[in-house]
Image 1 (tube, helix red, strand yellow):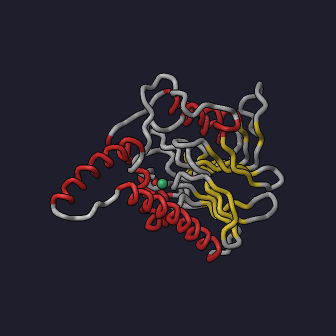
Image 2: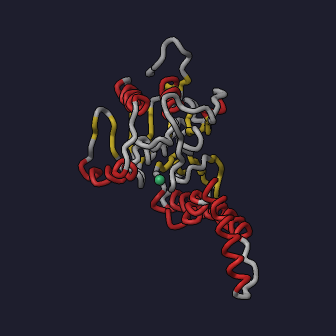
Image 3: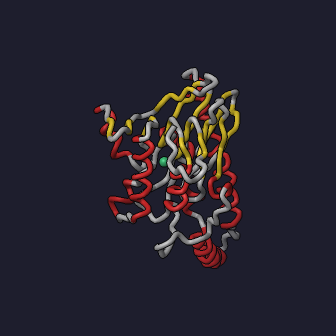
Length: 276
Ligand SMILES: [Mn+2]
């Protein structure tokens, strides 16, 4: 048992699954993530992809003490005896080229995927999920449409329709189009869940733990468990396994009444990622 903060009553789990922390970007809630890592203890820690955002690191580097602290805390879990597995995602795919090396650095094992067996004997396939990306194209459109992009689009739509009227074309509604996109995004999430649980069934697993689409979920799909541990950018969620094998989806911000709108200390802005 690795009690991280002896003073605080640590939440003890058998396994913890987190993903999509996007370290290296301003968007990561490193303050909440560090708090989480400090106050949980576990025997298995799965880092289910997009932990370090390599795409961003190439263009612009953002790293502060809070990012350092997160890395330190992950290493501390490994040092204190937790089995730590790092499964690269599409944003940290630079690590995928190292997979063949069978790398184990500072007690963290790098793997393309993992099999987790719960205390009550259920076999879970642990993968990031971008392998099934073709089905979530629409979700990205929705992400891009967020906030001011949408406002700007409405202005463009007005002028676009002025033009259409000049040329005798009927009005074309952007908001109706946007609504259709939202519906498509919902369908895309369904397809993602279907694809991942399909893979679990095909390979004889009892369920799948994934991330990638930044939408935490725990439900049964086609008779197997679909567990998405969410993200630490738009929300602060994790999948945990209790010592009796019970699985739970936890929302760390909600659980601790942390205001998600509070500005992280020492920062000027919080940007959401453009893609999942
Ligand atoms: Mn991803």
